[in-house]
Length: 605
Image (cartoon, rainbow, N blue to C red; front, side, top):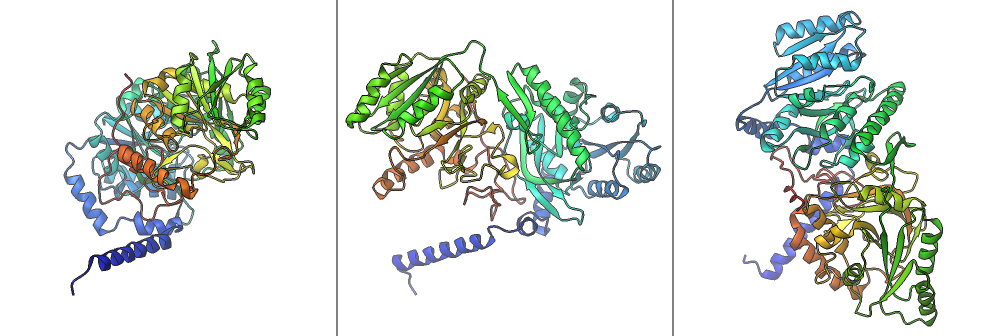
């Protein structure tokens, strides 16, 4: 039977519909079932991993560094069994232990060492603190790389193989970390942490590098190893010091769960939080960052930056058209709440005709802090802002929608504090809908074809996936509804694209241009505003605007297709079908194929 073109199209539509239904059926799988479906080491996965192991040359020795004080005997047995099952053979275990405190564990280690020369117990005194114990073991390591395994951590069979593969594929790598989950008492995996790629700001908020982190051994020795006084957060303190001067490509993320972590008891959690705060505060002081560090209600670290001491001038650019309901409210909140003193307001009037609103603009223009710029061109958000920025001389410009209201008075101080940091491009605030749910806490590429707002409509009482709705962190893009950037950076990348992205996605494109220059775009969650979205010009979902949206989306996909497909601030195990950080079914990464990091960004010129 000969297929007609119409029949072929019908069958393709049916096939795509069936695939969609199958994916929807899998979506929302409990994590245990998701692991069985996508992250188990079956025969095909083991064969593929074995073939990749055969292709690895050279194979560097990796020293696994553990401290087992306070662990149950079964926990130690489980850790040793996990090492015995490693597919990568070039490992050596250095395990610090106090034989006098736990003779049964000492006996187990002695038997294991007699059976396998790669297991090398390092006996320490009960008077030695955790840092000293780690450092005694570190001093004996003769391998070029050291994998620090968290307290009670258990490696998966392919863990060291994928770490070695990352070191081989990324020769500039100095630090390698991976995804992880929690091992319940009954042996079931739970609470996966699918992480973003290297994010120095997120590392200030929590030790997201986590349970298995591999360093160059000499680099750790050059840092004098682990530091006493940070017990409970030794690994976090080491991670902060080891990565302080590293850039993209030197800290490598393996997007697979390679280890299981062990839940801490309440007393350990409190000690870890206190020590972690000290570690972050120590980093802040070393780096010259003007910020205070506290522990938030969820146990993560909250940093509030302080604006630079020389108080650079900021011009707030607010496009509007007959904004009778929005602009006065926006201006009142700016003038009555904003604590940062050195700001000016530039209102870009895009053809207002309402007599009452024109009188409002005239009154604003009489204020020495305000200026009104008339621009009657057809609405083009990018062109309006570009022209406005070309008329100012301020150190910084802040793009702001007229339908916003200030919530936290020090919002501008905080945004400036981060924007002034070396290597930072744009910074953005957390924005809330009028009903108290989240509107913006970063932008993830690939959601909704081009980009979407993760955690949208999340309650203010919720922390989001692994705290990412409330933590300081990098995103590839931020919304232009509230976006601060130095005027020099703005001009260097050519501003917003007024030729192809006059209305939508211009903020995403702008942020990606900054990122291409090696700059980080930072979400500052403690800077908060209300955003009455789409009051000014209506929703982009209106039928009359759909064709324009499709054209702009096509332009973004053509220009940034690779970046949109692999957002470094997201994770290929997380879904692009929604904004809730749900599990991808199937994930965009597989154990059967090798994963490479996204293309390296260009250095700042």
